[in-house]
Amino acid sequence: MTTDMAPITALFEAENTARAIASEMLPLITATLRVQYPTSAYLVLYRNCDDELYYHSVRGARGETVFRFPRLWLWRDTDVFPHLVPAEIAALWPDHDPSSPATVLSMIRQIDQHGVLGFLAREAMWPEEECLDKTPVGIPLQPVAPSC
Image (cartoon, rainbow, N blue to C red; front, side, top):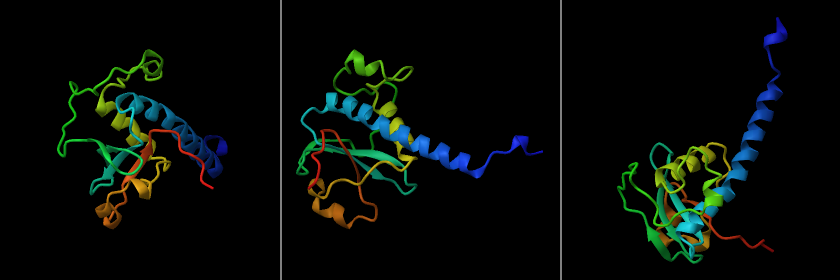
């Protein structure tokens, strides 16, 4: 009778494994987006009323706008980022198109399900964002210096 049962620890182990893998995917996301916005420091995402992430902007280290995504930009199969992704990065996206903003956002949303994304650094926030109900998510696109 117990042969079809798994201990509850199996679920915890699976969640920990999934969280670790999601964390390991972030460098792929940052490398992919750094090609698109080489002078940027952060990809900024907002959450909608359903807590789903969507693109907001790409910013420099002090919050200066590098690129602002159109407010109601509908991602179609024909929408692409401005630059080609190098072959060595594209090879890490088998069966997916890293030049597609919709594909990258879909992967970011999957990563988000595992609780590994952080809030946007305060120094990159705009003044009005500190008062938002939901703090913006920030994915660093450049190496982050260790804090002292």
